[in-house]
Length: 134
Image (cartoon, rainbow, N blue to C red; front, side):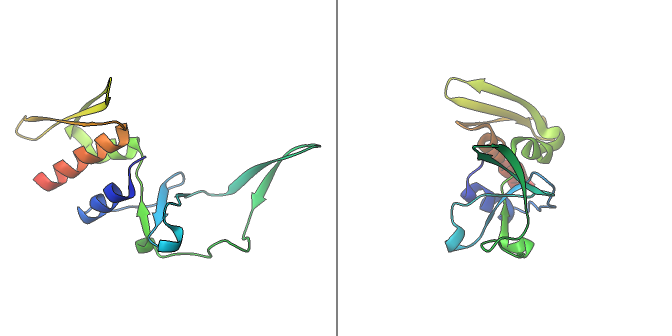
């Protein structure tokens, strides 16, 4: 998962989010710092009891947020979503001893390489570089 700092940089660089089920996000609030939320059509929780496991369908609870504006949320795109943002510039993802390397190409054919210990972070750095290059 990318860091909140990188997610902020993506937002500032112009990456826009259209929420879909399964997307993860943080809420820009000191009280919820470090919390990651997931967009879901329905929240289902497996609960273990001595008599067996039940699937609890959670609705509104006393601690739940009713709603927030999209601008208050900070999208934390997954690897596949970051790869999609790269579009045809994406060439490859390779695993190395120290982590991952994402290779991309610019329209002029110049190849670029981005390394990180986390594949999503490497993708995000590639997206940021391509957005900065215009």
